[in-house]
Image 1 (cartoon, one colour):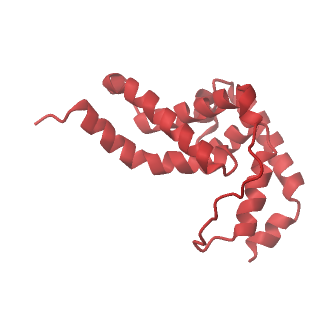
Image 2 (cartoon, helix red, strand yellow; image 1 turned 30 degrees about the vertical axis):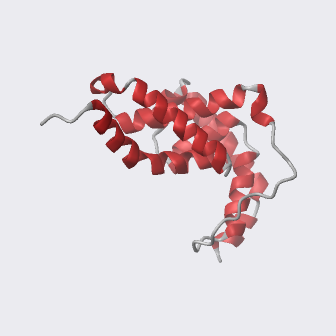
Length: 169
């Protein structure tokens, strides 16, 4: 019996939403609310083209590309830099991770330009090749290598020796 388009998409969405959310959290430097919005928009766009999914070789990789492009589009909006103040952030539950390391890394990622952050997340978090990253961002391989080197230098400069201190804990 053939499953419906909606059932197939729901299976895909439930299998990939956690991975997309983790990537979105890294892209947004820990802003879980924006990450949720980006994942929701990504899944909405994926659903709209789900009928043509047979032409997409790897829907999971395509969803990741849609997520990165959605993030970059959001960053270009004027309202993307607005942050509400006067409210305490949500409390994070302790799941065994070192919060100081997490905060230091997220702050360092936040200091990068959006495209540099996207390159770092795709190359080192998603473990994509230079060519896959270039394809996802619509840039050349040389641009990915250049952005990667510059972004890593900025991260090293920002984190300094503190990253070794955090990793030793």
